[in-house]
Image (cartoon, rainbow, N blue to C red; front, side, top):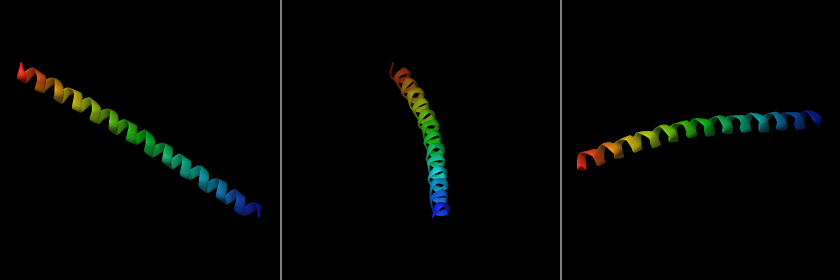
Length: 49
C-alpha cells in the first residue's frame, strides 16, 4: 500500500514539474511574440506617418 502511495506522489510531482516547465516555456514564447508584435506595430505606424 505505501509503495503505491509513494509512486502516485512521485508521478504527481513529476507531472507538476513538467507542467511548470511547459508554463515557463509558454510564458517565454508569449513574451517573445508580444515583443515582435509591438515592434511590427511601431514600424507600421511609422510607415503610415
